[in-house]
Length: 512
Ligand code: ATP
Ligand code: MG
Ligand code: MG
Ligand code: MG
Image (cartoon, rainbow, N blue to C red; front, side):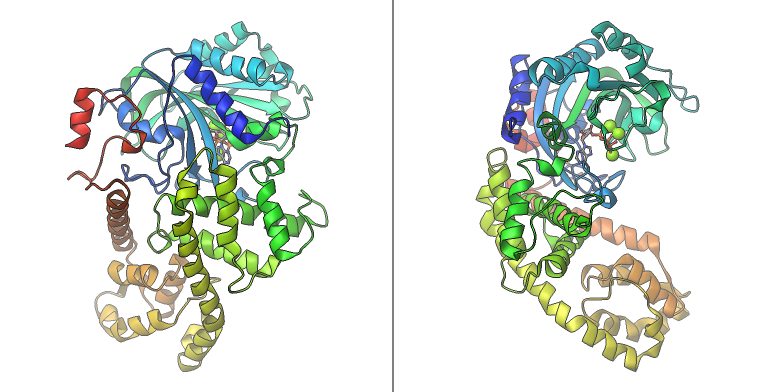
């Protein structure tokens, strides 16, 4: 490979450092300072309090390579993983920021120069987009940025307008947001004309998003003007690495190939062949999903997440184990996921040393999860079948996620009578117990409730989940940073990024 991923990453950081940007570490993927997120989904998350004016800016320009996970909330790419060439559950977002310093013109010029002069991508294969405005929200088209791209020399037919969905970036339901301009790469350099361009097709992929954060989305859906101009950019490392090496899939890079080799070695199956529509597609997809999930799981465990406390992570671990079992013949004591975590740590350890230092913890947790998985593989059908013999009404349950143990149902049966009397509701706390203690999926809980003529108290369930999430978060902060969360539940700034020169005021605010 001409461009190893480590070199692509260091080139990016060096480029921005040379232009006065402070290099900031990635925050953990656990968003312990933000109740609105389950996982960190963008490089800007750790700066949210800066955008909202809650803390003073730590520096005027920053750059980082951020560990991101997108398996829930506004940004959820789980369904695409393995089936397309460029969406992962875990990916690295290389970013640059201006906190009230330079604005649109410099931001576009810096990005363009990095891509075309440093990485040397042919300008004729690049497209840019701009925000075309939104009547409902009273937002105007960003013609300024269109003009800037023209000035940089991008031909008119490759500067395209898009609306809220593609060119107005928001981190979640609430929080900092603003119009953006994106740079896309045409892998075949086919020179599309105007509206024939279909963004998002595999050959034409989004590389870099440059957001001009100007608003905060409030709970009522309205936009509050922040009164300061910020630049917030993010480019996926896996995508630019594939493009620089002339590969049509992110999986054909040194971020994934070593994981495929390890799976092949461990399983003795045919090697990964990169198929998306060939005969090998099924095995290749299994390779891709397992490698993707191994990365996500390793990173989350290294950052102190516990599978028991996080439904998504738990689900991804179970899914990896069953793919390993089904497609690669992994068995109990085989090493499986734990061994793959070691390979992930090798590929990413240079950038994120915590993957290496936390490896013993990661493999211990995975061993435990593996044991539990193989135990329940054995028990599930037996326990469930026996229960159905005793309780024929349960035969109608169709949920794909059969419960890991029947204890949960035995636990709820004695209360049915009372719940029926109290308005046919399955109380939130009881539903949460099925979910958190017995590992029932929410779909299964709804089905069970239905079997017994009950309706799940969804609000109560959500409240119980939120409480559990908050407790888990506080536990993680304490375990990780050796300190308690502030009374209002927020630490207001990422302590992990302690290499940011904090002003006296913001430090006081933070550590109090
Ligand atoms: P897409 O439209 O391709 O889903 P996005 O618009 O959701 O991407 P942004 O939120 O703008 O992505 O994130 C900034 C950059 O991060 C993207 O331009 C892309 O390079 C990268 N990126 C986003 N999601 C993923 C993912 N799931 N896997 C790998 N890279 C990603
Ligand atoms: Mg997306
Ligand atoms: Mg997009
Ligand atoms: Mg985007």
